[in-house]
Image (cartoon, rainbow, N blue to C red):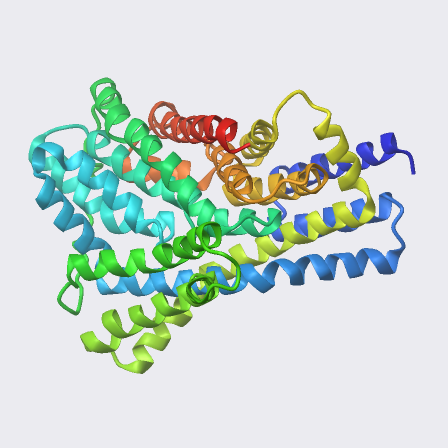
Length: 447
């Protein structure tokens, strides 16, 4: 089949995917599998090879993603149930004081969203925003936007949240570099989209607590854990993974210290250690029975299962593109583009994001399309970490009415569609643009 025909097959596959998700409301998991099947057949692959390619793509992706997302979900659920997120918020607000509580909420969101899913973290912490707004008489957005910015940044940029985990696996990026660059890009993104933007938008839109959101305080059946314990538990897997990456750069292969850090810093080991410590220090040591801890862990896997399967389907899409030859043609075409790979990655993710709304689907689709280009250009090492953050940035911008987060924030803050666009959508776009700007500049130095 000619290169031109393969490009048409790829474009048809992408448009079909968007049509199925947007117009027919077919679940992204089924849509990705169906499109992968059709692309393989149209590209001229033997039928048995199409199925084999799909199986290899699913297995290769889930072999890593399922373990990391599963462990991360259990870690986050234990943190949520124990009141760890609440403790972080209370302590930071107290330390910063009422005048600087914006910064405290931004940092709280930044830390909490590392192990806890975005929507869960927001629902847990929004009563603190309500309380501060009522006490000071300021707009809800003055306190809510910094919290949302902190949550959104780490949800998109820093593993073990599912988005960056999925993209890193699909393009072969080292998680240590992803964590490092996600933090470097995420901090200025949180500051600009959080406290700085909040001061501006809160003057334009004075929002009060909606009458229908008289939430009762969450009652925890145990005393809240200490701030130091929670902060330490969150940092353990991140530090171990970073030590693995740093030792790989600074120490020679075969060095015993490097071997130890390579083992401890593998995401499987680092997250297993953190999760077991969480089960013990936030669970059994604080009065939970082993059965209760097991029930908490089991419950955590329910929302994680959907994410794992969608990510696996993204791996199927990537593998079929590569095995059918479509990926190579696309990669050659993109390699001839005047745009650098980081800019291409951002734009592809942004287009898919605007079209269908889901950040996760945007990320896995963009990663699947970028994988062949990465292979053709021989990209490896730190630059792949930059590409992950570029894709995550593109999948963050311009959240609007087809994104569930848009409606979640609008409901909890009592915003009209117009005001949600002015606040939430602009905040998300600032995060994406700042994140992209940082990694684009870093790309000139890292190459």
